[in-house]
Length: 73
Image (cartoon, rainbow, N blue to C red; front, side, top):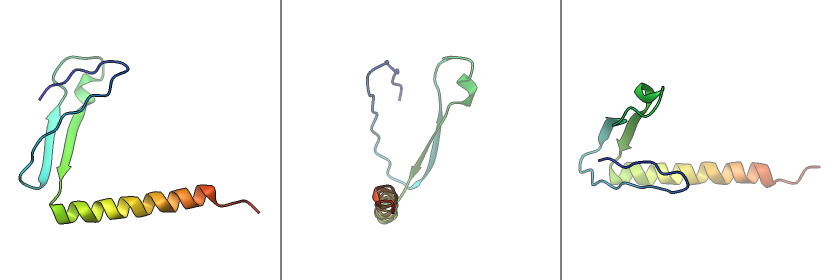
């Protein structure tokens, strides 16, 4: 898949991945001096692993939010 970046716009690309695993890609054009260092890595998880990941992420976010909103003494 290919999608050009346009300043000020959010681009999304969706894919159906049927097997869990790590999928890799690379920038498709010579776009600048660091072109060779623009890898794309997607880690696809099973539905159960994904649900665990979401729960852990939410718990971490709530912990961080609580730490920043605790009144100082």
